[in-house]
Length: 400
Image (cartoon, rainbow, N blue to C red; front, side):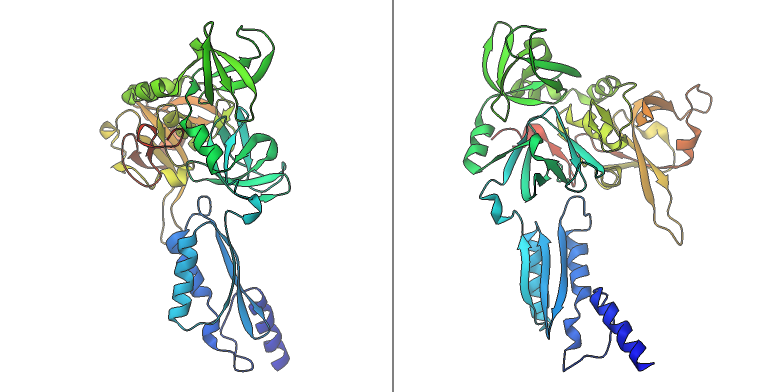
């Protein structure tokens, strides 16, 4: 029996579960500091999609080594302070990101129309999200030909080397200070010469941002982040600063933008006119109207202003986001699984199968009984302040 107990303690300790096995060789019980790590993680990095805090103690002989990585120096410092205050001894071996082997190139720009960002550094991994051409990102580390990046909505994912150009601080500042254009059509192309239907340089989608070189014969001459030169018809794009001034078209602008994507196929992880999931769709609508909101429905629901929880749809205004899922019970937590946008007339637009309009009116032809039954609440994010909400007119995402 004693042998079995010792063996169980070994396996539990090896898995870092740190139960209260009897200390060996005078090892202090306080060295088992799983709780302290959990407390810091909950305070600084409760959402692993936007914050990296992967730290665990590893026993080496009679000492514990604090191993792992994080892009949150303040969280790592808080953990060390907590351990020191409790007189817990450890060896610090935590890797702070960005990684030093990036040689200072910790900034980047997406250089293809739509980059597919993965949950792990391989093409077969889950599509976590997308980033469109010209999106500025922070680069955290490299794994082979893949880079772990963080997008302006703070989402963490991996991009293949073909979808990004790395920059140091000086290159980054140079790009941000230069004039830019935004592509505004749903789909299109940049050409080799200032004429449509000539050799294409790249496909383009709504929201692509490129550096402006000059205006020529009804075309914008632009430079891609990877230094390719192309021409975009002026009717399909607008100067970025002018776009910012016109992006705030109020809630009617949100509705007009949403309907441009009618019939677009549902794509898990999609956030572009090449395909969208439910929250990727709402995120894209807001972005094309000058506002960055969180990536996932489970994140969007926790920001903005609460409008309704009782199916009082008369209280809603166009542009409000409706959230659906499983209500909390005594034994299970609430789970948000879907989001759509209110467009008035008792209707909301959403990506489910494809982008389409549904109604909350049980007499309407497009009545959506399924989603009405699992309705949770409505939040107002448009022009609100809160976690993860960013007005591009007031931010330095694409400019200084």
